[in-house]
Length: 422
Image (cartoon, rainbow, N blue to C red; front, side, top):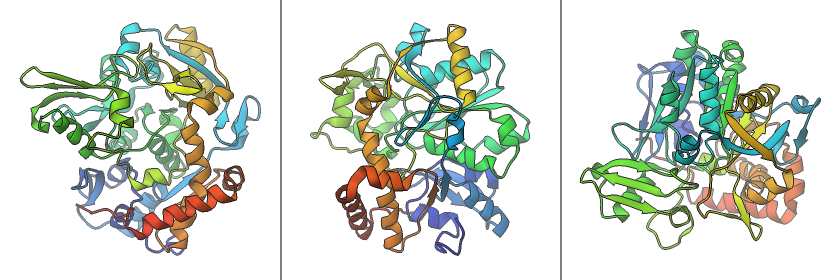
């Protein structure tokens, strides 16, 4: 984003205070810990803290890579020879339903173990030196740490959903400096940050050949986990293990404590019940995200829900993901992992995708209106290019588009996008 377009986006504090930070951690990696450090704020969000002044050149580089400031959509040409470039779902070279063939991994993972299985396969075959991902904090189990794994066992230790803030890219520049070849398993906005970095750092194309992601529902605060903990009459310091999902599909939200007690809640209770003292308090940047489905990844691996009466069922079942190859590299990786017996695949269609992840259709088509509202209100706004805005408005229709803009304007005037810096 050019500073003269939206002059308010001049520094990290502005990006944070106006709700544009995605919490990827790449700014810390670029600047170094002596100048920028990712830390939890009082609002329970992971945010960059500027420790010493950033010169203009460094701040310009940070703006160039920040997914809260700019995103460029995928190249339609990547499906010219195969697959389809779908209006909603973006590039799809191949798509299948599947899971890890390691039954222990499939059971312990958030769904079918797709991302973990691919990460393990990449290490086992020597295609990468390390896998960048996240897992539950070793010191504060309700929080999440960035992890650089060099063994299969380390990768498997992160085989769970983490509904909370982390900074998975805080080590990226150091790893590039060390000459390591990486796979990044992270949220779509983290993947977008890596793609941004690749436009200013030629090492990315060679050293980060695989970007693997989820379909993202948005990033809640740490307060959500704390409220779930207190719902059981516990305090966060009592907790020795906090698992959002896994050990089944979707598996319970599971807590273990120092005194040996355990506490479980179902997926529907945690996220769909209206009689609990928490909500899905996602950050503002997630509400204006143009790519929660990982169009910029090599492989997207959302849940492949069992459907009952045309709706996704969250009853316990054997875990399954989708394997959506978006690039030739992603297609090749999936084919090789299947040939090696690391994953099992079965057919899946776009019509099934429409039904299983209908909520993402709404988010996608309303995105242009939400960003338009920021500009209309004179607020700092990101520049999103290549996400088919005109087509999204057409699909939404005039009424839905207008309602989405007006709803965002109302929330902006209420200050719903503003955040504390500490």
